[in-house]
Length: 124
Image 1 (cartoon, rainbow, N blue to C red):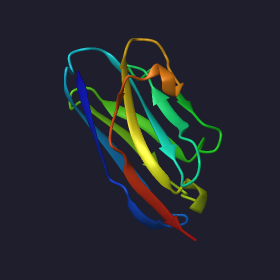
Image 2: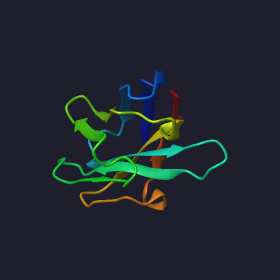
Image 3: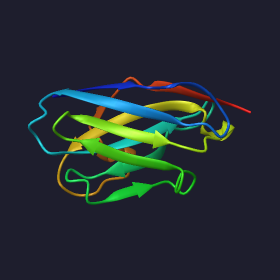
């Protein structure tokens, strides 16, 4: 079992930056791929970015490519999402997700563990 806790959300003006963190605990000795998803009000949850265990591969949604950077620190069992040039349409609850494995994963149904989410609000 793996527990995930997100932090770092908040209110920011358009053009600003935020860094989200996701602390993993529990069965952290297993190799996990990790990802960020988000859900805006009235919309379905969508993929934002993912990273494999050794951080050799990263994937991004087109809407965030060039503005967001996903990274991880396996020694600290922490996943990060650096968000720059934020736009009002980035407003959403951001969720951290994880699954065992060494491959690359981007679909929601591929992830087994989820955090409770952290709210990001971007004002115009």
